[in-house]
Amino acid sequence: MYDTVIIGGGIAGLQTAIQLARSLRRVAVLDIPGGRSSVAKTYRNILGYPTDVSGEKLRRLGREQATQYGAHMIEDEAVSLQARGDDEFIVQTKNGANPLVARTIVMATGIRDPFPSIPGIEECLGSSIFLCPDCDGYESVGEPIAVIGAGPQAVVMADELSHYTKQIAVLNHTGALTSSDDLERLKKQGFVFYDQTVQKLLHNGGQLTGLELASGEILCVTRAFLAVPGAVVQTGLLQGFKVHVNEKGHVRTDPRTKETDHRNIWAVGDITLHSQQVAIAMGDGAQAAIWIQKRLRESDHFVKAKS
Image (cartoon, rainbow, N blue to C red; front, side, top):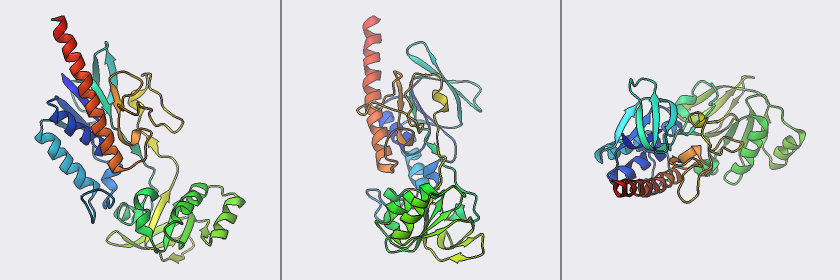
C-alpha cells in the first residue's frame, strides 16, 4: 500500500511527490506523456532560470529528484478511482494488472487544451506561440503579434495584450460569431481583424515569422497567442465523489490545505481554481504535501493508540 498516489506527473504532481518523499512517505506518481507543461519550451518567468527552461526539462529534473528520495514513477494512465472504506483508495490503471492501493490521493491531472490543427504549430508552441498573457505577454513587447482563435475570446485576449504592444492582428480562426461591439472595440484600438482561417505558420526553427491566411495573404508577425475555447479540466476520475466542481470544471479545494471536499483527496495545479502558473503549481504541490503528511501522522498515531 502507498501512503499517497499522485495522479498526474506535471509540475504540481512532481513537487508534491518530492515533498512527500522527503517526508519519508511511500509515494507513487502515475503519469503519461503529454500535458500542458510538456509543450512549453521556454518558461522565462521562473526563479533561478533567467533565460529560459523548458517544461520537459523541469519534468525530467523533477522525476529524477522525486526518484532520488524514493518516489515510484509509473508510466501508466489511471482509468478509475474508488474509495474502499474510510481509509483506502483503489486506483486501476490502463496497463497494470493489479490496482494501486493508497491511503491518500492527489489529483494533478491538469487541463487538456484544444490546439488548432495548423501546420507548424507543434514547432512553435511554447517558443513563439503562447496561451497565457500573464505568463508570456512580456515576450510580445514592441513586437507585431497575432491572436488566433474564436472572435469573442480573441478580442478579450487582444485587449489584455495591448498592455505590451499595439501591433496586434486578431484572427477569427474558428469562424465564431463576432459582435459589432467587439469589432468596434478593435477598430478603436487600431487592431486589424481577419475573419478567416490560418492555413500555415511560417517559422524558422520554431520562431514565428508570419502567418499564411486562407486568402493567401501573408501577415508578418513574430509572436502569436491562442484564444480558442474548449479547454477541458481533467476531472473524470472524480465522478461519483462528493467534490465541488465549478462551472468551468475546476475543483474547489481548501485554500489552506488544498484538500477537496472529499476527505483524503487533494487536488493541485491547473485542475484547481488558481492562476495557471508553474510557480503556483509548485506551491500547490508543496502545500498539499505538508497537509497530507499531517493527516498521515494523525492516522498513524490513531492506529498505534488502538493497538
